[in-house]
Image (cartoon, rainbow over all chains, first blue to last red; front, side, top):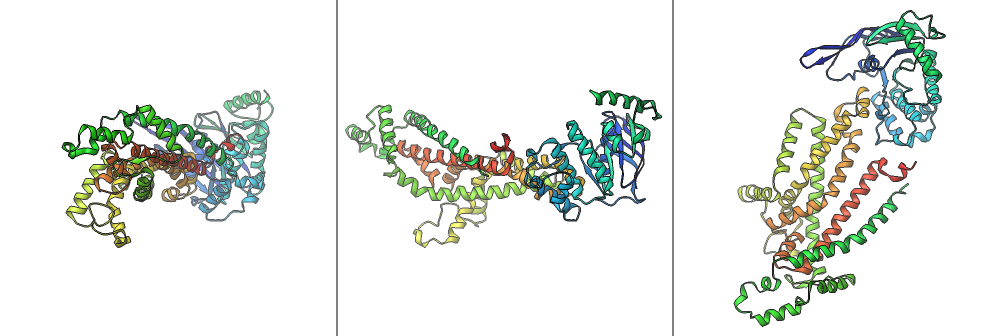
Length: 243
Length: 330
């Protein structure tokens, strides 16, 4: 179980009070399941990923506790697949990059096997990042995180910028990885796809969690949702998904 | 796999085909407009012994009585058949003078090229890996001071300190004076190489330091760099591992493309250190209004710079796959 207790992120500002961008987030993510985090743009979603991975900007301050199995996680316990595809090194072949992340994780990696689990052909090992399509690059980015052999994975907006079919495949992949025993936290604004694979989805409004609901609650007109903001967000998504 | 190399070489060969005639016309115009009279420069101190008739005779032998465009056509015709004419100052064929002196210059410029690349990139990498701390501050300070210092002044300073003050290294020439080539050992040659190489390198080192540092800092700050850092990569590992290609690619391109500057620096250094290379010959040719030798050296330099730029293009494409045109059409 990966647990987040009372996570707050604040930004120091020049001659101004601290700017709080994330308040009192509690999250419990079991392994073997997908846990969703959703909110509109600017709700502080990516900051949660950065806080867990320890890549917050220098002027940010995080308080609260993040534990894995009740303990402070050792380095390399949680891997992060960042939002931008520029997280892939443009001057290294995919195979080289996977080997780097495996080395950082202190293991070796069966790269062709890893790629095939992600639905990528072995020839991708010899490809440069600029030769990959958006969907392939997204999978390669996930592959770098998985190559560290961490059992916890945070995927930040794994479907952004992808067409519907590719986005469906990536979300299905998240569910597959969870079924393999990984603990997966998916941060996404793509609520219909996120809720279809997540055990629970935590909804954020302007840096404040408003509701944690089961994935199944996001259906129909959202009557199963408790908070009006979650309902509005879900209804807005429904319109967006149908057009 | 190297599908981009042949088109690139073809493209550059075509460029050379129009560049050489254009440069020749430009150079010849400049040389014939120079205010130095070659006969006067040749006669020099013997001015009282040489009468006007003799001067005209010398000018006629050298073909100086013909108008400039006719002289150019004669020169171009001979150049096409491989004859670059005779040097007035050295009284020998231009190709001979260049062939005799090119090895000395190549040793100097080549050694300076390697030394400045090794020193410049190493210091740049260290600076970036220790950004904001004292090694970075010192290296940046040195780079800025070097960038602002004229090469000839550094050369004089080196002579004053290491040759005159400390007496550690020779102040001039490629070998001890008074010995024949057979008597000069390798140790002597290397000893004579040190100060000129350092003096020529100064031109190239500081841009390399600052360039390498900047490129590596950009990589460390990039999403790719922070993705690696988030999974435990340290700064030094990033700098000398994944970051190396990001930093060295542009550095090598800048350095190769700047080969012409090294050559220019060698003109000054060869003069200060009395180094018997092409740079020294250039100065003598210019003072003697030695048009054939100046043309020959200028064309040799043009080829040198052209090859440097070509290698820069090739190196950039080898190191950064995104620059290869075949990849862009994919």
